[in-house]
Amino acid sequence: MKFLRNTWYCAGWSQDLLDKPLAITLLNEPVVIYRGEDGTAIALEDRCPHRFAPLSKGKVQGNNIACGYHGLVFDAKGNGTYNPHGNGAIPKGCSVKYYPVIEAQGVIWIWMGEASQADPASIIDIGECDKREGWTSVHGYLNVKCHYELVADNLLDLSHVPYLHSFLSSDEEPPAGFKEERKVEVEGNTVWSMHWNYNCPVSPLFSLLWDEAPAIGTLRAHMCWQPPSVLYLDTGFSAENGTIEDGACFPGIHLITPENEHTSHYFYAVARNKKLDDAGLNEGIRIQINNAFEFEDEPMVEACHERMPETDLIALKPVYLPGDVAGMRARRKLQELIQAETSA
Image 1 (tube, rainbow, N blue to C red):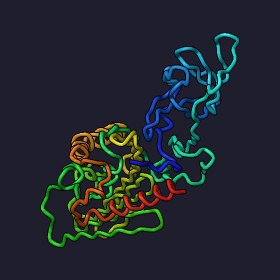
Image 2 (image 1 turned 30 degrees about the vertical axis):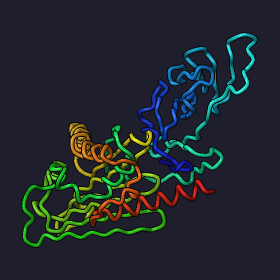
Image 3 (image 1 turned 180 degrees about the horizontal axis):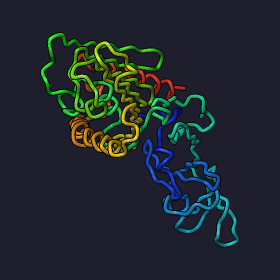
Image 4 (image 1 turned 60 degrees about the vertical axis):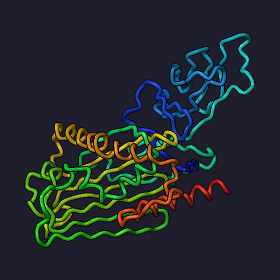
């Protein structure tokens, strides 16, 4: 299955790229990411052209990287610059692919397509979950053994929450006056899946975040998708007649990058406006998110992937439910963009 290439993907969190080269496979391509002596993140093909050793097993030298097998050195643009053997001549073809990289809002963004087309202005703004005054955030990573669009489907269709996530939903019977509202909106390349639950029992999550949470209130969960697979969840719980700002807000960023056709990198960050200095809560949230996906979502989407004879869900002609609208519109939008790119 083809991927959208002329776009920015998340290759990791800036805070996790320290002094050692990072090996990561993105869109079926082995990539090494390292910090040069000036602190800049650099990304190259993780495959020395001599004997195809991973450059990630080598050493950083200034802004260059030396192969750990025979010592060939490559600069930040992938050009061979030093050969310790023979007369020192650089062999013909001694270069590796270079990937444009930009760090913004705590994310290492990598351009997997034509380097000449990389446009920093097209990086999606995810500032809602970056650290800011009055908020605190938690970052994490999971490797998921399924096609990346199945992860996006899972995030866009929140109708599965009562069946898989007891921590995120109340197990109480909805009270009299409980009302649900659902809406899907598409604007350009952006798909919004919006959910409101009125007169809704507070969930264990929001009880944990907000000590003064009312037993009954309004829950909102609005998921925004932008290609190739950048999702923003605006979720919160407020008193029935209160404002969103006065309630507990728990926005989240979900950055899904294909490792290959069958596995995906899942980078997430969540923020909150309550209990900002509670370090124990930070770890508790990270554990709960990991548990929710590792033991609830992940086994299900991986099982779906295993049962699918191919990765193109639309081609398999699935049965549709109301909760599928946003996910299917996102899939079709991505399909359009890939077709336009490959036919150009």
